[in-house]
Length: 110
Length: 115
Image 1 (cartoon, each protein chain N blue to C red):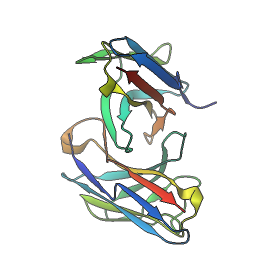
Image 2: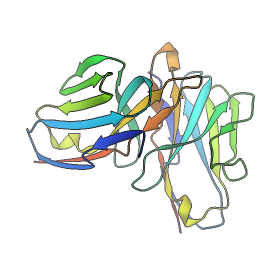
Image 3: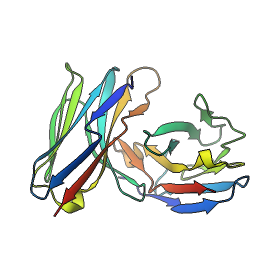
């Protein structure tokens, strides 16, 4: 079992729909990142969370430390949101490391 | 946040050859990280590169296969040596807490295909 699990693996939505991507982790973390990967491979950091909720434009990220779960929401989805979304946990301990989920491929159709 | 310029963005290489990937950061950073993302898989850390010392490699990765240079605080290279089709992946560099900020910044990735 991977230390960071994402669901769903693939998600297809119609433009305007509300999107939720889930991330569960089994390790102790100091923070969790949500990343967006474009088709060329480049990665953009969307959020870094250690508690609660963050919002940026149409994107909302939440984390529940007790339940070891985080969600990324996209409101009023648009075709330009089509990308792979990756959650990455920053592990606690002497040497912090990023542990990545496999990603959720989102396709938003017009 | 920092800006990372990663080159090349993609390449198609013959097996047995080597490819060097470069990452240039627009600010000084202590550590740079190199990742591999095989098709359908999550990112995996190859090594951590500190300026002025040998890179630290993760289990399953060795210096002979993935030599790394870190000549200064803004630049690093990763070489994929003696390539085989199994090396076909996306390779990414990353830095942490650049410009005194928080979190990670990633390069634009190098999509490598070995034929």
